[in-house]
Length: 386
Image (tube, rainbow, N blue to C red; front, side):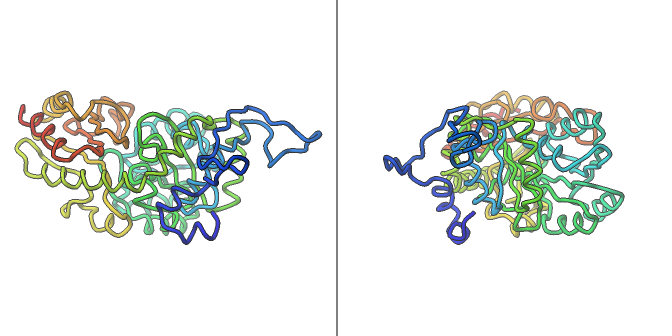
């Protein structure tokens, strides 16, 4: 990130970082580079360092510059998916026998990757309640290479004090990794709060339109970045140029979208509180949320994700999930359209029967940018059927 980019506002960086106009024609939108290989000026004479598509692509490089600028990092890597980004990061920074301390409500795919894919390779894991800092300190002091946290978490919407967690991790000689997918770079910047690494599923808010799958790793440490870059190059889990282009296009409007997501979610969360049939509303923007004060301190707004638990148990949650019209029953989150998810059988099915299991009376809302009155009316008709 250049010095001028460090001093400009978020939306200015989102629009301009890595997006210089094409010098030959003056095209304002940089061209999309599909080439898999690049001509050399003699053996080893690389033009701008480009040799082969796995090692570098101008469209992907532009996205990576954009991501680094928005997260306040010096290096960013764009992967083919969020889990590919996590896998590349762990393999770059961990060795067999190392231990990862992660939240006990981590995304099911993250836990599956660490426990079932990397576990047999020798990576150990220790789930812990990240809201209990004393418990985290005790677990980390027993040995950890990485401390891995999502805040807000998926789908229990727990909020963790990133600065406090960074201090605990660093005192124990561990690195802090923050999954910033739910917040996005617009709402929260973990590197500025002491984190060592930020990971994203760019499929979600960064892409923003439910039309591209991707992941990212952002760091502000050259030595760690070299390790991640080597694994990405050697293993090859890069994002393709079209995926990078679509992600860049979505990222340019992240700020204005997150404002609307947050406005809508706040209204819906407040409307849900006290509704007949609703047991609990999990949203950091509510003053009664246990993480509200921390969220207000480290986030710009409270985001577009809400989880709701129903007094009628699993049957009620399933009925609501299958009764909405504007909220589409689907996996994923962070798009402009509103989505409804039943995590216990969908996104978090892989952790059923473990301490990471999601309550069966819970649904997760990804609140889109539609008119809030229409979204509330949709939820009202669905909940009224209980």
